[in-house]
Length: 188
Image (cartoon, rainbow, N blue to C red; front, top):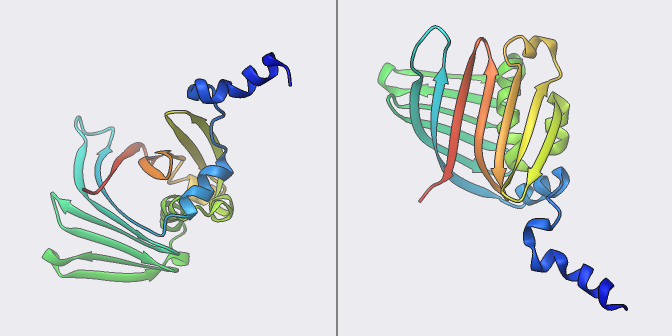
């Protein structure tokens, strides 16, 4: 093997930034290997009619294969839990608890599957509901999900999911004249 060829083979190790960015399949495979996680989130719901966003914060819990829980702890205590095809909404301060099948609410199902399908590393589930765009850099990756259903697209035009390795960093939902921006960090 020539010295030039050996030098070229060593370039990715000498300059990690020149190494290939991960593919969508590699990212999804890595995410599929994470069986449980707990994260913190902060979220701003930006509505054009309001001059400021409506902030909230809380925790996200994921348990493979299909359990996802979003617990808002500020400014109100609110819990949304999904297991299988069922969603439970709970707001204890008002004595509200509702449960329904996700299939009854296609718009909600699409939103749930954007996060749950990503956390599960389930590319087939994402592709069932979305056209999936993907890009990656050494600093992280980005998926742009556009709903396949025209009915769902009437409420949600696009969901952008960002991450680094097997960690989700953000979920932005554009629709209904506003933007919902969620920033995610590992729980300490």
